[in-house]
Amino acid sequence: QVQLVESGGGSVQAGGSLRLACAASGYTYSRSCMGWFRQAPGKEREGVAAIDSDGLTNYADSVKGRFTISTDNAKNTLYLHMNSLTAEDTAMYYCAAVFGRSWVPSPFERYEYNYWGQGTQVTVSS
Image: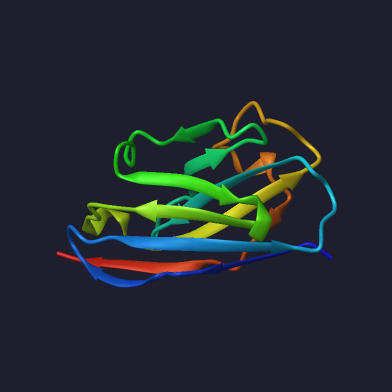
């Protein structure tokens, strides 16, 4: 059974940094596409960063230059390094995955992924 478990959220002041992690388990595929989404209160869940099986990354315009997505294949872990955080980054952050695929055509669309974590809260105070 596939499981995605996020960690690393918390409260930070504006301008600070956090590193989110998503530990994946229960799968045997060598190829996967993974992404980070976030949902603020009263807003739709939006994609912020994605990485495909070849390591190609995509970022939402709102986080380009500040967030970095990466994977540690040996640890089956996805990361999101977040720098220069602002109050607008406050949200619940979710990792998502689809296995057995090298890439997805729309990495920021929820329907591309079939596994989701429970989320980790990030709160940025100004």
